[in-house]
Length: 152
Image (cartoon, rainbow, N blue to C red; front, top):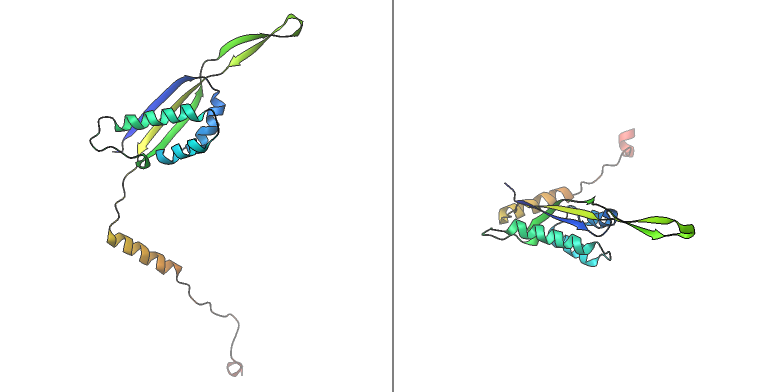
């Protein structure tokens, strides 16, 4: 059975739509690649997303004899839902008040350990042989060409 773990960050003070832009970049990636992508992305949402991913990674390694590496764990599901809005009002012209909605998000992540594929020398040799067979090109036969002596 594959190891899975979840982590949630609730009431993050950023819109769930803005968080969703960042989540789309890392869905299905390994934790190692996800961290690299988040490091290179210039968005405010990368900070809480990275915290949630690292929390889920710590959860998957909790109470394990053999610790998993970041490249052995994949982001299975990741989503951002809308949280409660903080409603405020701002003064407007002619004595009116306009609403201001401070949006929040709930970020949830589920990580899954990837099965290790052990390659032996025999497997590598057969894979190389299969690739060599697939790349060998057969000569093409000419269509509609015959010798003059055969025509008569």
